[in-house]
Length: 108
Length: 116
Image (cartoon, each protein chain N blue to C red):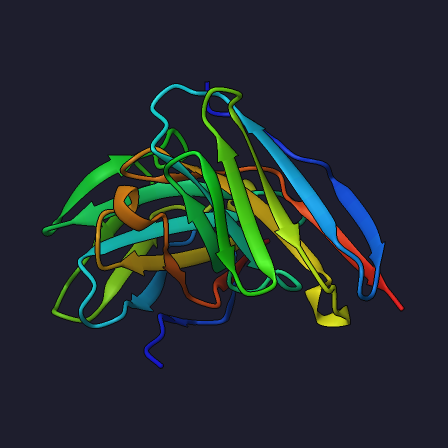
């Protein structure tokens, strides 16, 4: 199985913290990536977890638990410009399989 | 900063016509990919390419699709006889290492294909 599950949309206010969860099927799994996409433009890489634990990159952090087939993206100090689609993607070595995406709306 | 460039940004074609989408990957990258995204849906893997040959392809990448690296810089996707359902945004991507090492791909801005 290749599917990934993530919420279709999330709404939060400026300055808040939001967590976007992603569950995945485990066969052929190398790691979990997160990408941001604004208005259907180029997906932009945010973070990658190959091992369990937390990866922190500025305001964005990503977490992986391989035993639970689960990961999340944490966005802190939300800004209006963070309004975008966020995709988790499982790394199968030769390709990325994307989830359906989570539309994040940041309100003032 | 180096980037992946794609042309055209938008192409409109009639059903049954051939289309070639062009990409210039980042110059020191070795792995190249095509993905597509139907409007409002997820990004779908089409094909990966390394060392002048296809590494892996998806079920979507049937006999109507082909890829080529005709010279040292361009990477093309050809659709031989377009169908209505080929209408989508096509993204080219490249990476220096195989994905499994960093999970990071660099995507172009995409070519929007509209088949009438």
